[in-house]
Length: 637
Image (cartoon, rainbow, N blue to C red; front, side, top):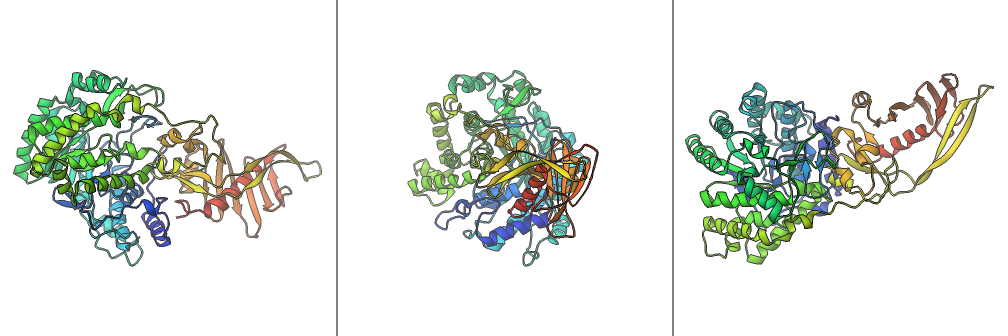
């Protein structure tokens, strides 16, 4: 299984600063889609007393485990980041592909893919990177629009969370001074001396696995508040609705065929048990002076349809539109019990249309995952604020609290307005066709052709749908690539055999940065052609050691002096010599010195008897080396 490799901090900062200064896209995110804030509207909120410029953020998941992911969310206006869940079991083997966004959203991916120590450093890097970007002034953010909050997420049992390594992670997030001081040395002046925050996070969202009993949830929550000293948000499962109501909503009201197994309800708390649990934890919250909240909702366990995700997995986790309806019904039930005194974090099927509705209910933060995995990726976030601003303008609201009250009619207290808005919105879902199966049954269109190494439709859909920003473009000149094979002749020279050439006709090409690609499969879902960009397009490794170790994968490692490539597990290399215009070409059973302009007549050759040398790979290596080194990407950063 491919492993994610964090990018060196100094190189990441260098690339971002260059792109900010250049005035164009930053990490391929267009400047026109950067959310800068507005002095006429106050979108700010406070989470456990910490100010954030907006209530929106990416949910704990594929968009919050690498530093560049978090910056891309920040560019889109996210200011509350639920960091990827960490746990003591940090060497998991996750089946691939692990994400299915053809319709509503299914996955079999549930925890961090980095070691605990890597996750800690990556979150510190991300925090520092956001502070550097804001300090440049290049984004022209409105006053106060730089304020952001990081929320930790840990799981999945008390024994693991009490372990030394998870405790070290939590301590490091509460005081990252040693890491900040070390990373500071990689930051160029004048940003090296910024007063970077050392307390990266103040709170934890507790992610308990499906089937975690209420006693275990309570023990972990008390440990976090009493011993670790952090605010605690408890993530709850949609199974709180109970089997009858959950299945009624999913099957009868919404029309989905996904089956919820009985085991999904077996060990999860019932609604009444969850209410009693929260009431007990409220006392712990008061005693410790730490904030308490709940998050709705975890994904819904369903039987794996086995038509895309690996058949080895009996169950999968449902998200998207149907989960929105189930989770909102839980919001309604909890509000009837607790009013608005219990803070509710919300993440279930959020998109640009219902984001303002969630804000009007007083949910905080409002986080998104599935929608960012669709066409446009992080660029979709800009539309969230267009919709929110339009809704605020429609009722004459200039702040979030004002928007809550005015949405309810303007004659209620904020607390009364949150409850009224909740009742009205939940009731409206029954008549809304946008969440029904019929409205969410169409898969992205395929055109019936198969991807190859070069040229495709160049629709570029695979670029933004990658949550890790692994895919990128580069330009090859439109040309004909000769396919020539050499054999040693009897006189010591070479004979040539030519096959039909490769035609390069497209405006640009697609490649993948292997260090960030975890074979999740999402780019395959949205690519109109078959085969998957992550499998069939050139894959570039960040280091030669990583390329050499991945012997089962085709791919490349490139520097200014060399490019190493693997084609169908056979390895080739083009290396610079001391003579300009000449190259060493190495492959299975041969080594040649060639003139780049006329490689058909080698200057010297060492090869096995009867060996055939395919010059096609020489041309591919040369073209890729020249093209990729000229393109802005992580390969050249």
